[in-house]
Length: 163
Image (tube, rainbow, N blue to C red; front, side, top):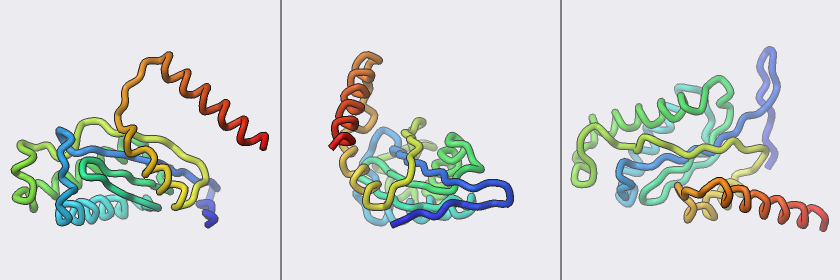
């Protein structure tokens, strides 16, 4: 699957983003199919309003992954703010009864989010990445451990490239 470059009057390029968001208190809200379906609809509605393409998405019981394209006109914090703010507002306003036993107050999502800009990939590559990263959410490591992991990844990449 090849991805076409986005063309405007003065630019040509692509911008891909992996965004992962988590419900407040890491509750397993998306075990309920109706909550998952409604949340998906509100997220897609907001991204459509922003003209941001959803290339892939997936969720676990307590987190949501989005693989987005054509977001160059928006900052990552603004995308997260719009997606989380709109879906939270709509879910709390219209469907609170579905999750009131798990959440309270004005929260639906946690404050933070994970993001990574990514290069040219296809849906299958992104799906594999999401599946493999399920066990790695929000793992905190010190700078030394981070550098060691990066070096190991680089060494592995160089060895594979030499084959």
